[in-house]
Length: 232
Image 1 (spheres, rainbow, N blue to C red):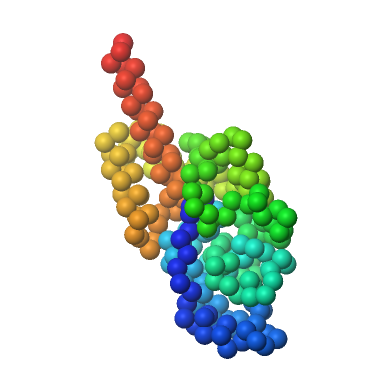
Image 2: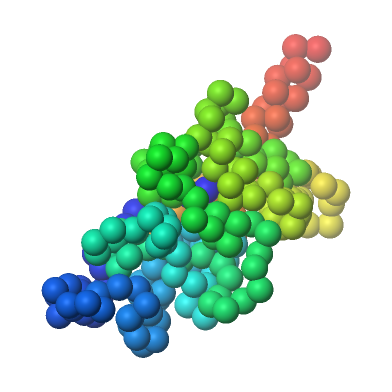
């Protein structure tokens, strides 16, 4: 999971809420298709073109508007509040996926929200780690909300794990060499490039947060091996 830093809502949404907030139709169902498109474009841009939950690459045509606090539990203007909205796979009216927003469904309720690690929470990225096979785990094994979030979002579903495993494998493999063959110098350059992307790019690499984690572990492993050889 990657932390999302919310930006100001699109002007069109702010104007729509101002015009409708005192009427009976100030709800998500009443948003026009054109306005939903504007919202998706804004969400995709602020998320670096990554799905809020899975980290898959998205664009405004391949995602839907997801409510962090499920619509079933929303009150007042929460259904249309921009701070409650993120972009997630798949696109609207697609078959259900076995992970992500579809699996999350109406979780969490107000009583369960403490168990949900939201992608808007400061420090959420550091609460998860990834192994070289693409599996996600809590950085702290005792972090129960992280464990519950992985379960509820299906973040270790075999399809998603395989996507991450492939991306990590390609990142750690040097051209024309075997698996995990990237040398430390090249790995550090690659890591620096991904971190710079995180700071200011509107389009991040798919699963960038998992790639950063894998590169850090790969560099550490190389350094340990090198240190062991020096002692020998």
